[in-house]
Image (cartoon, rainbow over all chains, first blue to last red; front, top):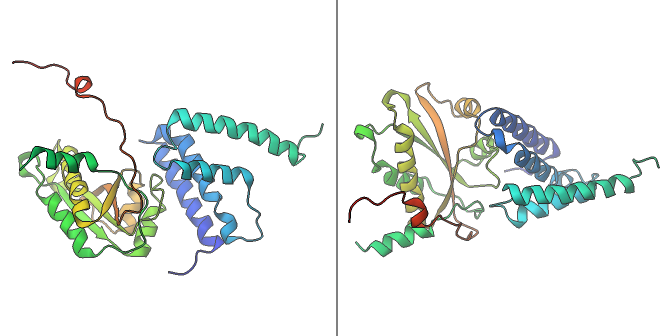
Length: 102
Length: 166
């Protein structure tokens, strides 16, 4: 099979998001947060296909988190804890990127 | 037959999500379905049909519409309900057939993971399924590249609501 291009990869993410949205309207109503984290996980691989894109620190944290326990990453207590930590990191990142005018 | 030998297989079963790249021969997938064939079903209705897929491009196509499917797998069994044979117990019957597949897999050196998360309409379209076949379960199949630890189970005492009799 040929190498995945950025276009292929983007298409996979689009399919994933459409499929997730469809499922979350039905039997997977409770999976919303988990599917969003999976989408972040998929985005973390985008720089592999788009070399001009720098690795994103937050996305790499998501990748490490999911890879660290692929069987259980979606379970609520640990996912909630991780997202809490990530949200703190997010504040740091926003400051570093000087999005805050203060 | 020794009880403990069977229990070893049952207790040793794991949902494996990381597989080696090695492809799985069609004959082996058929051997798994042979195990499913002998599952019990309501009134012997046998309400199931199976699609065996080891074509890389089709496996990839189905994976992108299955949000619960996290990693690549070389092969897939799609379990369908045959609407023409459906009864109120068909989902239970399919569960029994699935378990036969999962328990049989390690004897062929294989591992599996059942996945119920996929968009039915898209899968029906991609596989060109006739209206009487409804896909209800994916079972990814491959040669295992991980040994997940056992997950916890409730104790017998928690499960048995009541013992009636001596």
